[in-house]
Image (cartoon, rainbow, N blue to C red; front, side, top):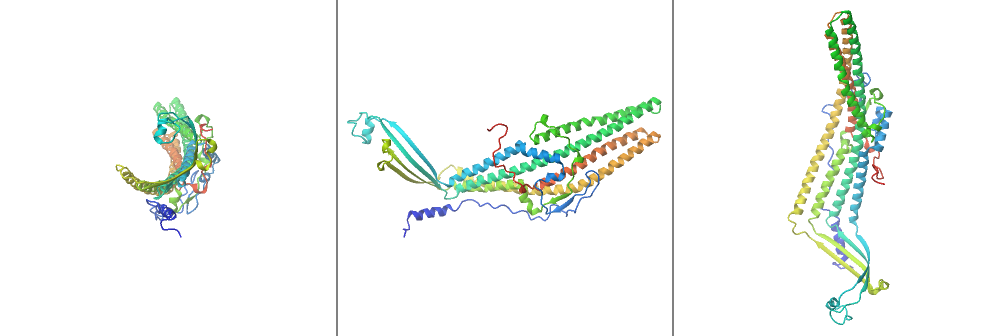
Length: 508
């Protein structure tokens, strides 16, 4: 039977201490107990205003979000652009490498769980004075103090082992912090994918909207140019005053002035799409997007509120940061407590290499040390207090992110209902403006109304056409925003590359 003071019992006691880790154990905050996203129950569907983007949209609570949700717009061109962005976007490449770096850093930190082992071999040629030998009594061959000793060789081969006992879990908390950082990078990558896909869909819709607005403006310019030609002929015949021609010229010039800003916005939007797919503007030659090429998704999955916390990458990011802050409190606490280090070495030491591995040349050592911080000028205390404050800050930021996420979903759900009503109203306004303009032109030709009435109706019709195009585009962009607000279905695909990406020729 082993005695009570046996080293085995001492080691068992140390291992028992090592099973504990100081600092708080992280527990992810519970999801909010919300029954719905909006103050009032969602309707089953939106209105169906008709027209190009006028179908009703149905809300399907609890339905799964497709991993490739953008394919619901039924645009092969859009699908192709997103595939190209996944392959060539530098932001995604940087996020991939940041994740791999964080994971390898966490794996490197796990090495502290094990002893460090190193081997060495040295060969040394040395000459010492007789006085040094006499002082140490290491030689009688010197004869008298001050005599020199012939140079000699010294060979050493040894293996050293060192291990720091993680008595209070400081190492484990440090590794836990590194793993939480890797988790943060994981969800930052997912957020990058979600942001990229949403931005591409939004950019495509914006381009299509600008094309529709440009088409509407060109249509108005064509109408007003034709009207100007008629007025010039009437002036030549003496039927109308020259003032009518001047007014029409001013109206036409005003309409034409709205065209360059739209064309400028269109060019910038295409440059932005090129950047998303990792191409230079001069190398981007994809066809323009048209609203007619995009299908408005009719069935919209609406995740349950209890699942949103798990689905939103930004919430998962802040959860990982909260976890990291919790672990850092443990690290700061452990740094205030004793540190126990064990080390040992085993080797051979000889004057001749042939005798290096003989029993007579054996050397070894065993060392145990304990270090307890006594006075650090308050450094360790205030570092721990700072870590606790950082933990509270991370908790507040997590809560804010959750609230913002629910707000995003609520905003988009409300917006989609009103978007449909807006499209319906704008379509009715455009139809009424077109009818009013047609009647005014007919009455003017018969002399029933002054030309100012025609000008007014032309401007109203132009504004109605542009507003209709904007309203239809808003339905598309808010639909994409809903998929983004619900997390985008990233959990149904693997976005993590298993190899380091080599960008821009920096690495071989």
